[in-house]
Image (cartoon, rainbow, N blue to C red; front, side, top):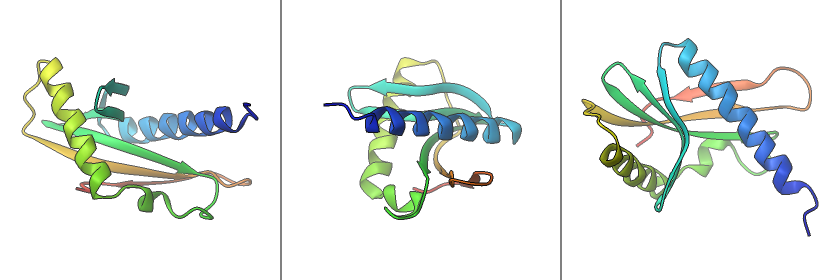
Length: 123
């Protein structure tokens, strides 16, 4: 039975990804893909930062009751993101100088503005 929780989480995730994409493109990055999927997983945002391919994981929370967004991205998650990035590179004509994994943590409190933190090079 769907009690709406999955749809609420998906909506919150889309909200965070939209906010993250806006923040990163406002900072000068170029958005290449959003929610790119392969058999190995999904990348929330793929961007170009100069000649660097940026694989961006977006974590959005309404509270820190289940931990901070940063805590949800461990070494295994970073390794999986790198594997998916390799698949993306194999499917596209691109030769970046490097591939960097970034995190954008979004906290959307019940009241007030969202807080967005961009952490470069998490792994």
